[in-house]
Length: 324
Image (cartoon, rainbow, N blue to C red; front, side, top):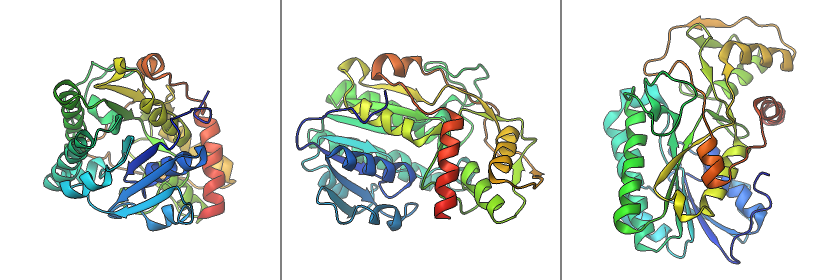
């Protein structure tokens, strides 16, 4: 179970793009704990230096400040690398609606640059972050790969494009690619600040400060919240997956379904506060309900997520109590 038993060839080196971000920094940490080398590439536009300062003294860790929109930077970063874990992207559905050109340049061209660099440098496996947003308005639950709807945001479009480019790079150029459709990842080091902050850390921070959080919509929207440890497992198992998985995209979640209003009440109970939320308007481009079928990832990646929502939430609350 999990990933702590996984074994890679001696001296394996990983490149984590977006390595100073929430998911990226957790991947860097996990790889270093397993005893392998990791190079972190980040331009610090959305990531934080403090997330990776933790590793600064580790001889197996290297930080490169650079932008994936620059092909030369990507090629240099892939030098001597066995596995790429491509997390570098700008998130947020509402922000992508405001900044479509930037999202195209960063999330599509940037990812394409990384694929090309990985191809040129003979990388063994290119594992990249996709998103559950690619399901768009497809109404059926659970969400199943191969049954997608109309896209609802530029962000979703960038992730769909990344998946299509990955198929081409596997088919025509022999780059083994693995796409991971993340479902509402949460956990330690997720940023609680700003208008586009993820809901769980934002609520925790506001409740700890005695503030009234705003829930977009009526709170009856549901999500397959996925703890960071499950995402680490998926990335590392993606690196070791057989060729049968190459060029494919996989749902990465726990396979559960939580309603936002229930999460809110779970947080107030866990934090020992009694604060009523404010209900605001629905967010543009949001999917109402999300729940993942993870059977394909189980079959082809050996993905067996250990952390259900309750276990992950307890760990996340503890981390935020100690670090906010």
